[in-house]
Image (cartoon, rainbow, N blue to C red):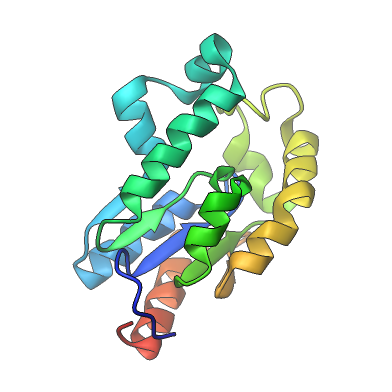
Length: 173
């Protein structure tokens, strides 16, 4: 997918617990590229996401997230977005001309990954809350994805190898 858009070689999207960060780090390492995770950048600058939600609410968090996404999309390498970053129509527009990998996971695969985690939108409902969230976001994820990879029952190294192979086949933008 050739494009004149500057910024990262790849943007990774997907639901919570899919393995976006793990896959992104591995792909970046394999290709010798920098890696940025918007959730990690937010935490480093503003504190735990659960605390931001609790103290300031979701709209405040989404504003921080949008600013961080804008910044990350000016960098090189591999960028992983938080699961809800794609909800912003401006972010959707920003991703339309980019190479986007969607990392998906099914209910069985995500159950052990999200257990005991501090994810504010999943805190009360576990896998049922996760499924409702994914069902709501799936059309957006799928519309933005250049290619989809399933991490449900596979080692993250294997998923990263598939993403890396795809990028090498695609060549430079």
